Length: 412
Image (cartoon, rainbow, N blue to C red; front, side, top):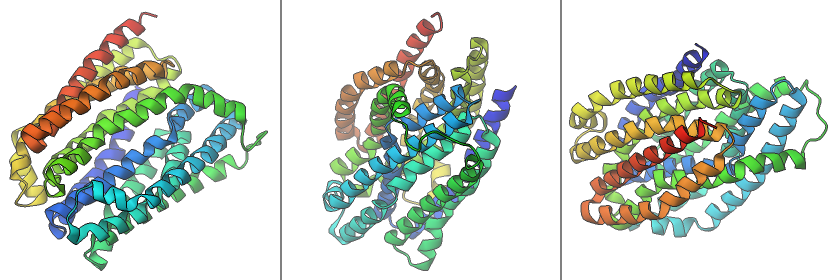
């Protein structure tokens, strides 16, 4: 089955870099103190969240390339039009981060001792946002054509680079600014790898215009609702860290971000499967295959989470050293939520691939305010364990709602 084969390549692109990333993060946690490591993970999260500012174009681009895969000219126009658009958006976001870097550092509630370093880190990441968005767009070309083997090989190379470069720079100078500088440089190199790999292939194809307004309008028609999902969904994934930092201080953030980082790595497995499904469902995939993928996903995720649930304290201590034992309960709570979040990837992907991106956006709009109210309440009551509980409750409800719409939609 091509889905299993393509999913295996996508999973390999996660597992192999993760085997490198986990020990590297363990070394970084030992080289930085708890507060600085928490800040590093927050900055890593900020770069991850910056991907939402592609305005849904990358997802819309994958769908358009999948539908128009027989027309190289159309594909090239879609890709170049998207690229120009995200560069403009990226420059605006970069300027905003640069302008308000001091304000952002203040909101993170860091101690005075590291305040200047945090401002310098924000200054560095402000320059990489346009390249980060371009990288996502150019990956969409290979994803839309379902060339998952090539995509995975390139991702393995660039993801390992993203893990190793911060550590390499830290060995030059033990400073969080140097660690972030390594991360920024790795992001830039990652873009160049995907750009040059695909550009020379696209160069041979003719096209009518470098920027096509009608194609941009078409992409935005699908992507506009995706933009809402892409902004709100990562907010509900990443902003708990910033709320936690603001309410209980940056020194406690690592006790949440450490187990959260494990969960985010495990979530890449169902994410890899959903990435395989999206272009295939866009091209009319049999619903019976979707059910088989759902069962396959449940089996894999259950097997992955069980050892982490049983040996959470030992794993955290072995990985990050002493001082993180208190986060074992947090990890267990997040792992329960991970099961539901993983299963939700299938109906979420199905609904969007069928062209109903407005449905997932409206679900997220419905969830966001109650979630942040619950998050503030539970963080106030239970600190980092409260943040984990709020996230797990939210993804459980989200999963139930998505399956209700999935079962209704498949009858259409």
